[in-house]
Each structure stands twice: as C-alpha cells, then as structure tokens.
Image (cartoon, rainbow, N blue to C red; front, side, top):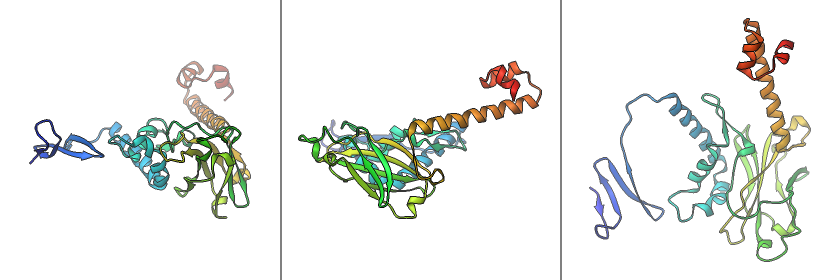
Length: 267
C-alpha cells in the first residue's frame, strides 16, 4: 500500500499496483516495476555487456570514484557510481558484443570544476611512480592546499593502486609507491586534484601507459592514438586482402574499405 505523507502534495512512499515510490538521497522517486518476457535484442545484450564491463572497472576503483565523482553527486539522486557510468559508458567503451573493451585514454575517474594539472608528467623511479605538475601558480590561497590524486590501473589484473589525498599542489610532485611485482606489469596512469575542503575536484587527466615490454617507458596518449590507428589500418588492409583473394574488383574493395585503388593493387 502506498502512502502520501505530509498531505496531498507531500512525498509518496510505498507500492501501489506496479508503481513503487521511495526516498533516494533526499528526493522522492517513483518508478514502474514489472517483468520482461520478450527475448533480449542484440542491442540490449550489447548494453548488458557494456554495463558488465564498466561495473567491473568500477569495482576495482570504487574508492577513487567515490571521491572523484562525490562532489558532483551532492544534491542529486545519483550516487558517484551512477555518474561514473553516465560519463564513461558512451565514450570510454569501444567495440560491440562480444568484444566490448575500455578505451583508457577516454576514461574519466573524476569530474569537477578545479583546474586540471598543468604540464603533468609521470616517470618510473625506485620507489614506484613519480607524478609531477607545474606548481608555479599554486602558491597563493586557497588552491595551494589542494591535494593530488594519483592512480595506476593494471588492466591485466583488473586492480589499481591509488592515492586520493596526496601531496599539496604547491609541492609540484608526489610518489605513488608500487611493489616490485606491479612495476613489471602494464599500467594505465591518471592524475587529478582534490580540493582541500573536499567540495570539488578536477576532471582526471590520462597520462599514458607503461608497458614493460617497451622498457618501462611511458607511452603518451598521442603515441597510443597513433598506435591504435596503425593497428586499425593493418586490420583494414587485411580485410581488403581477403576480398581481393575472393575475386572482388579493386574499385569495389575501395568502396568497401576506404582504401585507394593504388594501395589495393599492391596488396
């Protein structure tokens, strides 16, 4: 039985038929409940896979996300997890069922109005990772007391090492300690700032990837984009090569792949 508390214009709580109402983070929410007996469409199955991928990522970094999306969630019916999914599901996921993956260069781990770190860099040191940023304009009140947020995410293990209350912005650098085991793994790196009063954050900044196979050197976002583009072009050339062996004309292959006839003739 549903109840209208505080008079006819007050919030409605409880269940009435297939409508249920309740208070969520200070707001009255009403939704329809029911069961779907129809088979899921391909689009729905793709959406389920996307949700699975992004929720699995959230589970690994939830404490960081709760800080990174906490301020923007205040005063809304959304939890930080909801906003993390809202901002990342459309842009940071790539592929289609069954191959949905995370585009780490587009992943946001915090979202806010504070200025992003300027000239941010990261390098491997004996203790772990040394994050640095331009601190020349951060000596004045009140921003000098804001703190750095750092993360190293390990996609192979789906785990992360992070700090949400690191060094003051005015210091210009901080070290994220890593175990020797972690320093030999692939890692995706991020930085952001957290306000001293915890009322705001900066939008996270992706710094790049470290791959042990490449000598522990940082691969910056621009290089990753070029690497992805090269892989994509090789895949398209492979498709064109297969079509050519099937007897399709160079003109038709060009229309299907976007490659030039000259390139196709050399395959």
